[in-house]
Image 1: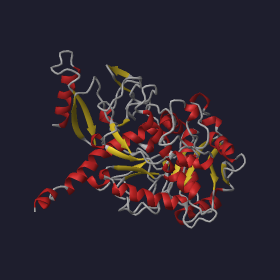
Image 2: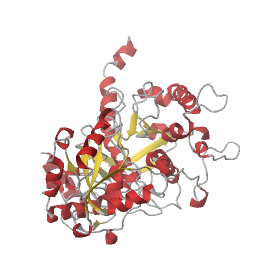
Image 3: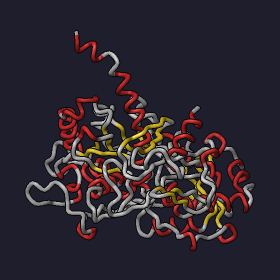
Image 4: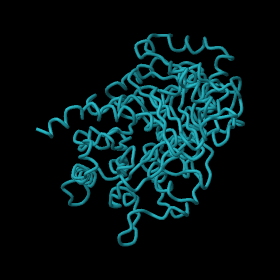
Length: 475
């Protein structure tokens, strides 16, 4: 029945003798539910599908009016390809309408040292040279809130060419989601320690202020914060506030340090780390025979909690002739050395550390080194639309520590099998790139689309809780 209805809608919309003008509706499919939005100007948005039945057969973009769809060479349609243009995005056309609080700069760009004019909340972003720069090093790996905030600010600027995934609206009643522009990871990284005569850290003070602000807003009270979006990518960010704001949707690295009632895959979004090594161009990517290292790992070896598996693997693999398993940091030339090592390796180990995830996975992806994930509790970004088994090898921790198991598995993978995964990796790199302005199918675009796919479940939660409230108010 679903396929019959869907095919009928497509015939009505795309047939040469269409009974309905293109401007009448937009078809949205979110979490398997069909939505028709009226008064849309010449645009049809389609969701991601990972099922074989919904593949686009062409190897090149297929254009139909204002709609462009692309299927990566390795078989799955990974994302919506919206052609960015100067005049193509408004609140009706955007996939997600977002209301953003005008929080004081101390919560966001002020943490970068930016100081605006009196009563100026946001920096001027027309000129990319004047945008406050996010600090480098490992700070960058958790910089998602910075890129998402910049993207929203630019969404109302005709001079900025970007995808039409999310657009900022100025009336909260028109919004699908309420965005909280708090640079929580930066606040933790730079301001969690006491300085001078401080008795309470700046990070803790900001969290307390944020809780007081949010819980006093009508937007929060309306649905108890369920339609709010908070970025807390660093696993230690928002430690003081997360319990009080747990009804909101979080953008996280994983769920390793969250109780299930506060964060879970049903309501929250997993975002990729920003990689720290340089992206290898496809044309410069070494093939199988030019990668002399079989297995590569460089990083902290002695970790606590679930990360103790690293030292077990170290003692199993350190003396193997085609394995590089060594301690490493970002100090000195550490990042460049790691990038060169990954680009020279067939397989890169992504082993659980203090938390289930790390930026090492995304460093491997942009190095086109097939990731070997040994982390039983890991959550992966966009996994509802990306089949990671096509670009990664998964090994259970209990198997990985068996003598000979891991190397026998990897040595048994043929050149053709590896090459297919290598080709797939090169196709997916764009999904893990953070940049300004954002580009179609990059990390920012993918995060907004992941949030959009959660909207229907948010509404379901809200509507179910509203079942008896009207009758209770009448009493």
